[in-house]
Image 1 (cartoon, helix red, strand yellow):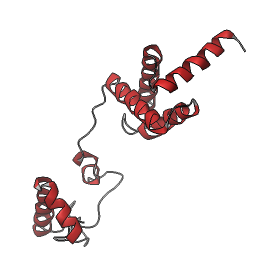
Image 2 (image 1 turned 90 degrees about the vertical axis):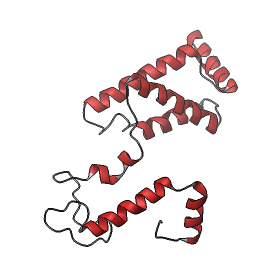
Image 3 (image 1 turned 180 degrees about the vertical axis):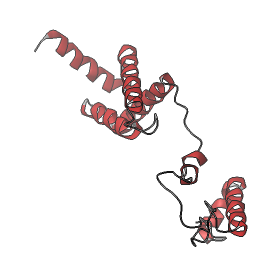
Image 4 (image 1 turned 30 degrees about the vertical axis):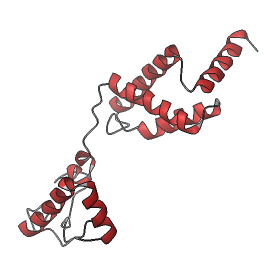
Length: 166
């Protein structure tokens, strides 16, 4: 086996033992991940810069595990690599609310709502989410109550299934 391959194998085994990548290898991987993320987004293969996050994290974790890393350490390293790659491409992770279907559903979109988000009745002409102002008020009241509730209150509601929160 050529010397450079033996050195690479030894270096990767050493990285696995200490649970971290060497700085040069880490920076090279971040740069390559950022390139792949950007190219996929620019080509329209993903809908956002985060479109390949799951497959890339699983692939990196898998490769590190095959090199002798423990699963959890490999997963944390994959997460760190991707976090830095997303910083490099200036990707801004949306807030939780923005990741929900209500943000993506609008007239003319690929997914168009035909039923009320609250009562699931048919939407009248000109209505895009709720069939009436009553349904909208109840829905928004429950969303605000969830956002403002303490952790203790949320667990109590979940355990007792009060107020239709589930």
